[in-house]
Image (cartoon, rainbow, N blue to C red; front, side, top):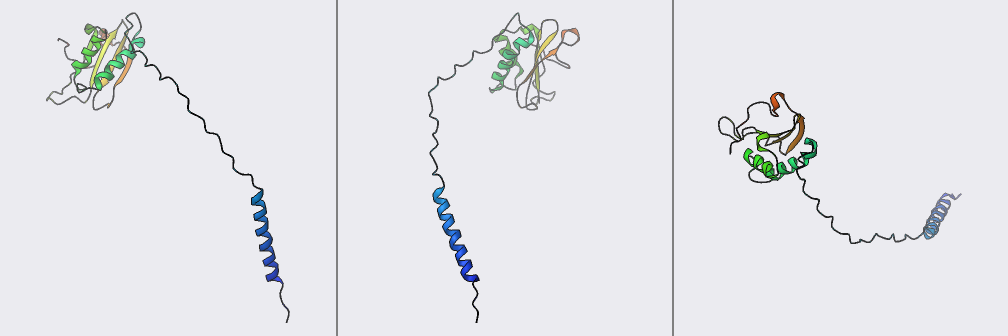
Length: 161
C-alpha cells in the first residue's frame, strides 16, 4: 500500500508559515510613544467693549449697538413688550422721535407673533428689528427708508411715554 505524502507536506507548510509569522512579528518595530502637547497657560481674552452709538456714523456703523440692545431686551422677561425695545434704544442714545414700533398685542389682546421696531437714520436708511415667537430670535438689518421717511409698513403704535 502506498502512503500519501500530502499530509506531511501540509504539516510542513503550516509549520513554515507559523515560524515565518513568529519571525516577522519579532522584526516589527516597537510602537513609540508619541509626545502629547503640553498645555500652556494663556491669558483670558479681554472682553470686547460693548458697541457704542456713533452719532455721525452710518446706519451700518450703528447696527451693532442696535442689535446688542435688541438682544439684551430679548434675553429678559420683557422680550414681548415693544416699549422695552424703545426704552433700551433710547438709553443707548437713539432718538425716540425717529422710532417706529408695531403693536405688541393683537386686536383681540393676544401677544403679537412678531414685533417690529425701527430707527430712521439720516435721510435714506433705517435700522429695523424684529422679535417674537414667529422669529424665535432677534433679527436686525439696515434697509432704505420708505416714502415719507417711514421705516415700517403697516400700522404702528404711538411712542408717547
